[in-house]
Image (cartoon, rainbow, N blue to C red; front, side, top):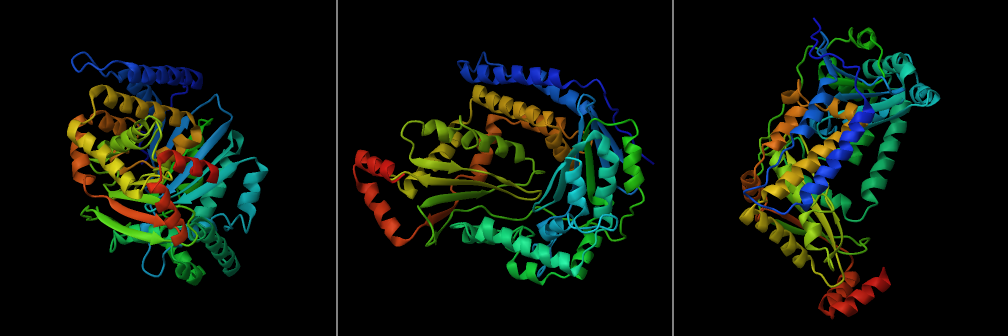
Length: 491
């Protein structure tokens, strides 16, 4: 029996939402400029939350009898529909000897199905002017496209056909093995430092489902057979492991169209894989990687944290934003004049059952890697000792909610977000995550700083050939002005 959880609201007006986003941006700026007074300051984000709630009310949720979850958001003023399909299968599901299968299979789903053989899918999508892509992660694989609204039925037919009835010939598998190996070489093996650094970090969670790279090993990718990949499909591509989201101009019978192509798909008898949080004891570790192709030294720092379903996730996320994630971060503010780094780069890894905060710093000519580590340690120590004042914390939350609203105005982004809804947020995918963020206090951030970050950094020194290291060491002891002049000349 279908369960209608919410009704479509056809009165959604994108123009009004854009106006609200502009006002929210003004609010964020005003918050950042207000003088702080711990007795007078009040953080009121209720208007912004109300906008999130209104967006969430546009969502229609239905669960088909086969377990497939369907979410729809009707935006009648648009001329397109964004489709996102996510499956609960990623590299963590792979067994020994079959690493990289989830990513390889993602490639194969663009290369032929029972009713759209060989390259019919990309040809049909290109013919109607669609944009389409996919990605594989540790926990899931998602497929997404944006199509003209009148092509919804054709697109759902093609999506269902490749998900339910893919055709994996020996030739197709061989061709996509080559494509994956080329991707592996381009994005990983041909990049200085990347392969050994990645393998070292993965070794920190050995014996866990996250202990191997998403792209897999070269040997496993080469040895994959059509029969093994068909078995992978039969086990993991199933309706009760799928969330489908449609966002855009939808007709009143769009759910019936979904049912027409997906309702008869039956889940297999075996249950889905289950996982629990992995046990990692954060501790300080230091190693170095020397790469003859390295152009300059760099410092990689990583901290083991928690997965997205953990109670500490939101506090850690705000802490990352405060320290590293924007132009007004603590790192940027503390190094505004004559920064000791030429480049800083941080993209936290968020999995269901684990998380990694990471930071890459490329030093200036007269700055050592030790000095960079001391700088980062000082930022964490400051947070642990003094916390984040109410004004700054409100600014972080205001920036987070404003970013979320901007994200949801884009139909493709919203569709992907909805298809990535966790089980605990099934009925309130937008407001519940925000309510957890809003509840984070300065004391929470101090606690997670001490628990996951202080004296718990995994430090990897990324080092170039000896002659570059030798020259860099000389620059570090030279007068700062002279070293900076040489650096500008070199750059």
